[in-house]
Image (cartoon, rainbow, N blue to C red; front, top):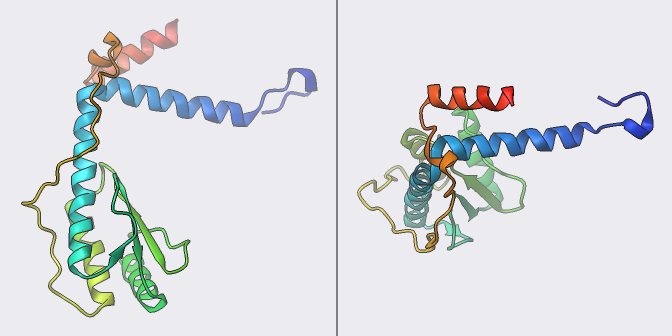
Length: 173
């Protein structure tokens, strides 16, 4: 909220940015370096599974280097069909670019959702035999080779109870 006196005004934008920074830092504290590595592997592997399956359907994927996002070239007709199918399944993709659909995957994306997305892409080209090859796991080629999150705080609080106590102690300070 803006204060009445301009010289002492504070901005909601700054407050919002601080909240994002605090949220990101608490996420890192809760998961720690091993948890973040594990999440990264899960996200990358799910993205790689979708990349491989869309390639088998002969879709042109515009980014061969990826982590969590794929950009797929589509015709206007395919884009409309895919969007209609995904929306009917409560799946939201990025349709903002002409002749392109972008898909971003995170740690909450489950295999059922990936299969529904793949099904939508298969329906758009009148194919019905699309499947994810869950046995194949691609190796991440660009992994960090240096240590990160080495401070003890990132290796202590990995349960909800410990995390809530840590946040309470920070609040009291």
